[in-house]
Amino acid sequence: MVTQRKPRPSKYLTVPVRPVQVDRDRSIAGILEKMEGAGFGARQLAEAHRIWLDMLGDNTTIMVAASGALIPAGMRRLLAYVIKNRFVDVLVCSGSLLFHDLHETLGRQHFQAHPSMTEAELESAQIGRMWDVLASEEEYHEASEWVGQFTNQLDQSRPYSTREYLHLLGRELAEIATEDGVLTSAYKSRVPVFCPTMADSGISLGIAASRFEKKNNFQFDLVQDVLDMTQIAAKARVTGVINIGGGTSRSFIQQMEVATGIVKTPARGHKYAIQISTETPHPGGRSSPTSNDEALTFGKLSRGASTAYVNCDATIALPILITSLSQTAAKYMKGRKRPSFVFARELTIEVT
Image 1 (cartoon, rainbow, N blue to C red):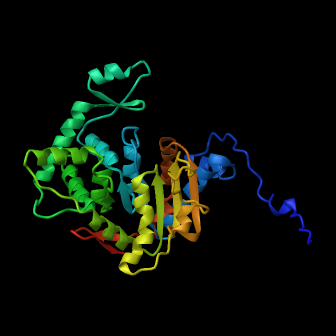
Image 2 (cartoon, helix red, strand yellow):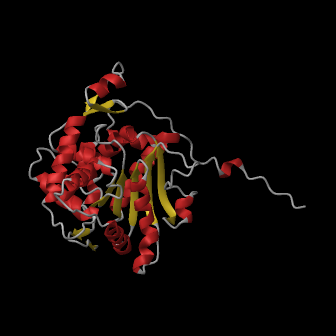
Image 3 (cartoon, one colour):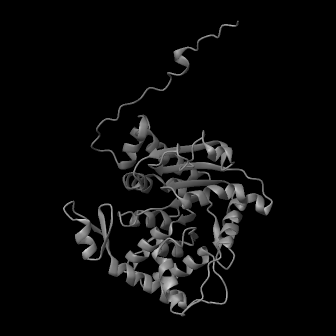
């Protein structure tokens, strides 16, 4: 029997952990730089920052998947910032996120809850609760009605992809908005927005209520969304994903690399991937961008992809990450060749 030689500890013990020390003069970016030498969540958040900068420097087509109650929790201006500054190129959002964004773009607000408030009294006052954030049910209803009225103005003789519909919705909102949110920033910056879960939102409720009253016959063409996203993946030189939360938005972006076979282009896999989530992979609920899970098996990631999994509430990670980008991304943006899009019934992508 051949005796295996024990590996030397020095083979593995090469990079010491550097304790994060207090530095009163450091910027947020400087703090993240220090955290890169630490471990656990601190290191992963710092690596997410580094990977995002690498994507900007590598002329990557950057796709963000976002879901959950990020807007009620106060993340709207942060998301608008990365869109306006083209730190992202494509958005895939849940229907609820886009409805919450629309709600605030129409001049409404979300409010903090107090622990003493009971479900019974909130229900009696027609107030909806999302953990520790509140919203007026009446105002949500008014926002849904506004969506129905907007949709009634569209051509009812043909279906619309969610991407085309949301571009037009962003244009309509931009005419009345006093502050840009996700949809208006995306419209002005010519960033396409997709929504694979449109039915699960106040947007669809507004459209459905209007149809019930025989005011529209509106239809969504979700297959066109798949084709548009597939064209983006096929024509992009390099792709990278940033998954904020989980769910269908993340899965929709993850599958686009696999789907390039539809247009006879071999799947290359995303070269970069960041996930900010509190999900775990064990029950099959997280197809995360890490090198040892199903994303690589299915070809969603390229071999050797740069990845970071930030196991953290996104409302903690995003303010740190995006503020840091505001301090560090400028030099990467100067020579960045970002994709441009021609918005029509079918999306056209041009990559230089």
